[in-house]
Structures are given as C-alpha cells and as structure tokens.
Length: 355
Image (cartoon, rainbow, N blue to C red; front, side):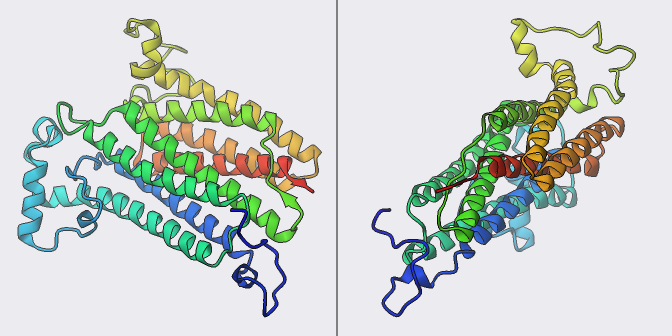
C-alpha cells in the first residue's frame, strides 16, 4: 500500500488520481454496506423463525440467483425439498403454495448475500483503481472481503447440517454463522469510523480499542452466542414467563446432561436460563462504558448505549412473554445488532487518536 497516493493530496492538475476522490465516499460506502448486513441479520432472523432455511437444498452461488420462473421449475424445487429430512419428518403433506412461502425467505436471504458481496467488491475495485484507499487500509478492506466470502461458505455449511440426517440445522453452526455476520457488521462500522475521522482530519490515526470496550464486547459476544443457541434449540419456547421460569428461578426437575458443561450448549432450559441473566451482565458493563463516554464528554454515544441495552432487555422479555411472537423476536435480533453498533461507536470515540 506504500505506493498509493496520500489520502489528502492536493487537487491539482498534476496530482494523482486519489486527489480527485471524495474522502467521504469511503466511509459512506462502508456504512451503506453495514446497513445491508444489518438487513441481512434481520432477514436471517425471519428465515430462522419461519423455519425457511432448509427450503433450498442446493448451494448454487451463481445460477441460484435466478428463482424458479415457471410451474415446471417450481415443481422441480419442490420435489428436491421433498427429499429432505425437514419435509419427511416435519412438513410431510405441505402444499406447493406453502413451500413457496418458506422458499421466499431463504431465497431473499441468499440473494441479499450476493448483493452485499457485489456492493462491497465492485466499489472496492473502483477505489483501488482510483488509488483512493489510504495507506494501511487496503489489507483491512481485502480482509473484510475475504471474511464476507467465508461467511457465504459458513452459511451453506450451516444449511448442510440439516439436509442429511436431521430436520433442522445445527445450533452450533447457526451460532458461528450469526457471530460471523455480526463480526463483519462491527468491523465495517469501525473501519468506516476510522476513515471518517481521517477524512475530517488528515492527522488522525486509526482508533485503538479501549480495554473497557474489549471487556464489554467480549461479554456481549458471549450473550450473542447464547442468543444464537436459544434460537437454534428453540429454547425460547421452554418457558414463557418472567422473571421466573414457571414457578421457580431455575426449574428443579430439569434433566441435566453429562458431562455437565454440555448443558451450556445443548440443554434448552439451561441455555435459556443463561441467556436471561447474562443480559444483565451485558447491561452492567455497557453502563460502565457509557459512564466513561459521558465523563469524556461524548454524550450521544453514551445515551445510545444505555437506550439500546434497555430496549434490548425489554424486547427479550417481550419475546419470552409472547411465546416467541415472530415480529417481536425479529425486533429482538435486530436490536442486538444495533446494541453492538452503539458499543462499537462508543468504543471508537473513546479510542480515537490524533497525530
């Protein structure tokens, strides 16, 4: 990257091509891609809750972008689905019209993944050709592109787990898929904020992640992991009461697995219990992070973090109390991504540096 022109080169007739690029275009592009990833997370939640993820039984990265266009093509897709464990064990007797409903969400989910790939790769090539990428950022952007490609493979790896011997995807693979998406989302926002600071001040350097933010994000990542387990195991249906699980804080008759640690991965009741109360550990560290931002005179990020964590807890409780109503549960997943974004924003403000 050392051969690239400086990011803020003067716009003269003899200046390199980078001088003609608008600095604000880079962060705006990344924020737009992050918004698409957020939409992907939301659509992914709908796909999971409607049990649509196994409706497309083949991975066709190119030809799969074209949906069935006539009755014969639809029947072929339906016939392929009827060979899957989900149809045989759960949806036997489903009509073609019902199949089209679940196919829709999985198709949109995969199509959006392709759109995100193009929305990132094509502008990246254009900025690279214009020599508009500042020194030190090329590797980061290429890394994000590679991570996006890996995410597509992880998605199929997840789906494949439900196409052979079981009628549902592995909750562990689901967790990997969700956490990878949120990692990409957070990295896009962090990189966009670095570039935005550079566009405003040529002396700005990439922000450092504060230790407090590392702890906050680590605990949040653990909670997101248990959230994915809760979704994958359908653990949210185990108890629809709050704050107790039925009449007890923890159901005394819960069947426990051996070894004991396996309960934190495969036992729906234990997973729901952990997910319920780990939320307040997230709230605690998020409040400390917000307090530090407020002390450092960053009121907007501080308020965003507090508002996001409180709303997320309320949506989590509402999801349980509603018996995992579709749109409340989707809002809960969407709010998780927004909480992550608010914490990343706050961490970046606390870690900003100038030369």
